[in-house]
Length: 136
Image 1 (cartoon, one colour):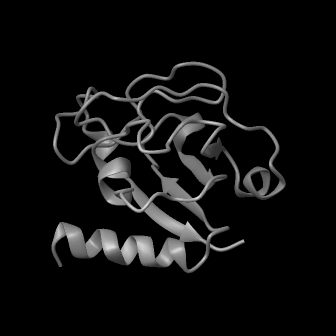
Image 2 (cartoon, one colour):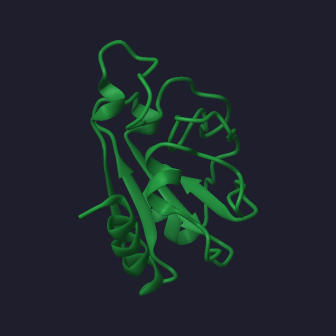
């Protein structure tokens, strides 16, 4: 399937469950970034391209601002309870995907993934990741 078809499939999974949480697993990332849970708190705009946002271009528009449009968590239990939200996020570096330099408390470099740009980590470990849609 092409990129557009994959995004439609991913969005259909998410739209079928508006309270669902997107989970990124990255076993080769630093401990704080091995498990990240993305929880929407506003409606998803029609022009929201999930796959591009998560895989390649982590931008704040449309409607993608930490603790305004979404929240990030280190555990699924925290995401469900709304406790221990991440406090730092940045955006808008083309070719850099989720979660750019977002971190639980402060900027955390080189934990992002990209399918279009060379990683800042020489061991290519940012390519070892998977995304899941989890139902609460």
